[in-house]
Length: 409
Ligand SMILES: Cc1cc2nc3c(=O)[nH]c(=O)nc-3n(C[C@H](O)[C@H](O)[C@H](O)COP(=O)(O)OP(=O)(O)OC[C@H]3O[C@@H](n4cnc5c(N)ncnc54)[C@H](O)[C@@H]3O)c2cc1C
Image 1 (cartoon, helix red, strand yellow):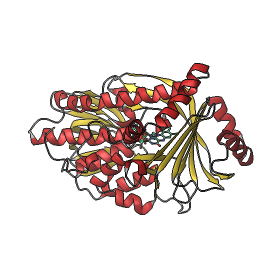
Image 2: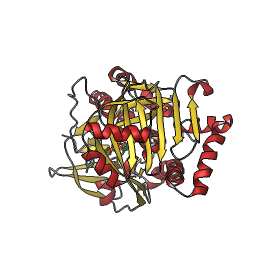
Image 3: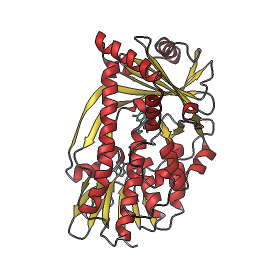
Image 4: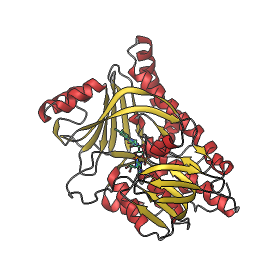
């Protein structure tokens, strides 16, 4: 078995698998290392606890690499509207895709549906080889190659190694790349909730002093919630029985969706802002949560990672066309320059929102309520925010525009 590859990608989650698809389709020889073999035999009537709001730009990326159709055949849930309001005042904002003349704002997709479609596509690519379940224990670089040592003692060699192994990236640690960041002092509690009223294909979000509570519409009529709150409160909520939990949820969210009728299993995740000090070194690139994590309040985390994957793929294809070594730092720096500024801007926006809506200071409470109402009644500003939330602003990659990967960058 040939142990030499063009690229070794560590992590076959939504972001790493997307990169592997995009590059495998271009004839790059890829080793894809994933620690956990996903179980795709889920019961038909079950729903993944983890869902993501997938932007229109990310949908385009999935379409470009040929996995979107498989995702829609499984289950995706479109939403046309978004309603956001502040629990401590009258301020509210209503986003409607009709105002932009487009059919929808995005889709809510179960994470396992995305990973399944990507892995299915990868199985059909002759230049992609899975190492799964497998983890890495070592990483070394010389002038010409990078080497990755696997837990089973095997060594793999490639021109470039990519870290897509999530927020606690082992590869980032082995490469000695530091991160900046802080805890949001919140946990995101997730669960599937059945309500007496229809969700109206709308994403709902109520800002509480302890954090936002979002209801994301699912195709069976139920909603997936992300309830960001203090770690202590999240623990209490996890310990309640279903009836008591639904009662507290009702009191917090109000009756916009009628009565809270039923609830699936609950889980909570600590929320952190984290940003890698650098995304690249010679023969190494970081992307997705390995490079950055943001607050889930605007549902942007994986969308930023998918934009990273599409941009890195474009840079590498362009470098190969110009007969450049794809592991050279000057090549990888093009990817870093492209993505770091855009990711930082989103991190700063999410952080600002979190602080503004978490404050109990009267001046800030006044400001955010005025701000919500003003934005709601200023169509150009509102439309710009909508386009940003759909991933349609900024320096878009070819894949996000539905174009072929080939071309100069
Ligand atoms: C409560 C909550 C709600 C969210 N909602 C949204 C949303 O609505 N929209 C959105 O865009 N984002 C959302 N996010 C963020 C989103 O889930 C992440 O940004 C996304 O999962 C990151 O994808 P990734 O592939 O980079 O990393 P991961 O999903 O963490 O995948 C990393 C992969 O690497 C593997 N791995 C880890 N270590 C190793 C190793 N040493 N060797 C080999 N493999 C390894 C893991 O098994 C995993 O498969 C949410 C996050 C939370 C916590």
